[in-house]
Length: 280
Image 1 (cartoon, rainbow, N blue to C red):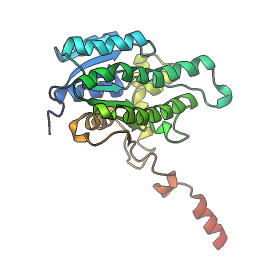
Image 2 (cartoon, one colour; image 1 turned 45 degrees about the vertical axis):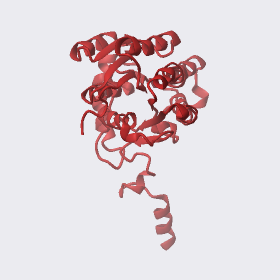
Image 3 (cartoon, rainbow, N blue to C red; image 1 turned 120 degrees about the vertical axis):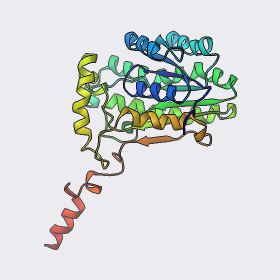
């Protein structure tokens, strides 16, 4: 099937690299016109050139409300309206425990991962309603569903985003606006390197090393790729998901199905070890 987004206009934050870039490429291939809102101006301009007339880039730091509003407005002035919002822009922190949190960094993480999507929905909702409805896709994480899959501020903000998704889905349903979240597992992108303080080129290269580790971290024995998340977002943004709202769509290679011994016969199993000891 192709052309699932024919005639649609989408705004994708953080669309110049990683998961966002995979979404831009897939959405354009499916017929959409895209506003890419990102702080990486060089990559954004390159996307404009590659997808001439189909993609517009605008510099957007999602901690700045005026820049979010401007990105939403560009969808209207450039393409006549807005049908799809993808809140994808993301960062990660390296605060390992509650005793190690730094107040300023905590606030910054929440501004990007929770306040930014909330403001994106604030400004996008009237445009979506004016088109008779639409779709919002929030990029959350399995780290927002369970402990152990991300640093403390990142995980807590993503948990907040999941509940924000549910509450806004209920609020906007009368306007025929669907709101869903996609929850990636371990996806090989530059976010891991960036969280370690690497510059963007080094973080991009580090993604290959992340892929090697990811291939052994979950039941499906390969690294998650940005395209895996883009496909999930496409489904949630398309009319194929017209009866789906308020859900958390997990795309994690089985990472969250259970403890490692549930799928790895070589992993320690406390209950099996206990039973074996008792039998002896």
